[in-house]
Length: 208
Picture 1: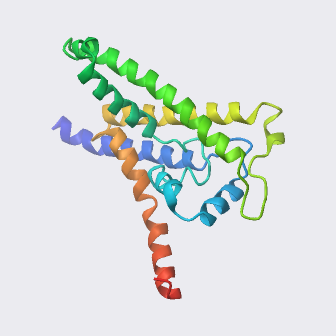
Picture 2: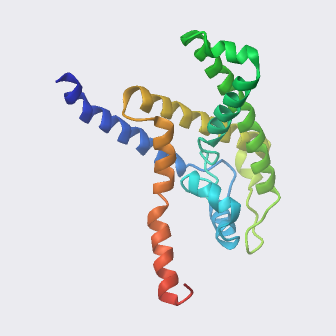
Picture 3: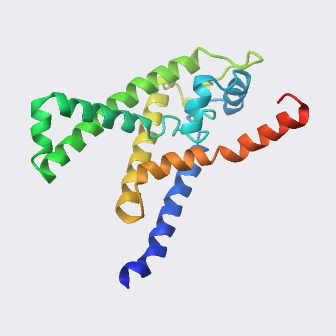
C-alpha cells in the first residue's frame, strides 16, 4: 500500500529532475555567441557533431554547460569494467562487496573528471578556432571579465557533466528506473519534434 502511494511521488520527482536537466540545456557557457554556434552547426550538416548533439539533447549546438552530457561518465564506467576484468587488484575490489563497489565508484568518478577535462578542452579549443558561416566570431572573450575563455569553458562543461551525474544518482535513488538511462533517453527524445519538422519540410520542398 505504501509502495503504491509513493509511486506518483517518485514519478513526479523524476519529471522534476528531468525538467531541471532541460532547463540546464539552455544555459550557455559564458562568453559564447549561441546564435553563431547554432548557425555553425546548421551549416555543417549532421555529421559526427550532429550525432553528439542528439545524445546531449541539443546542448552541444548551443554550447551549453551540459554540452558534454552524461557520456564522460558512461565512457569511464565502460573503461573501469574493462580494467576490472584485466587488473587483479580491481577485480579483487569487486569481490569485497559494498566497500569495494564504493571504491570502484570513486575511481570511476575520478576517471570521469579526467575525461571531462580532456573532452572539454578539445571541444573548447575547436570552438575557439572556429567561426560562424558569415565569419562572425563565436567566442566573445570580453564577456568573461578577462578570465581565459578556455578555463571558464572547461570548468563550466565539467561542472555541467557532474551536475547531470548527480541528477542521475538522485533519480536512481528517489525516483524510478535508472537515472543515467532516463537522462540519455530524455536528451534523444527532445530532438524528435525538431527532426519531424525538418523531415516534413524536406518532403514539402521535394528534397526528400
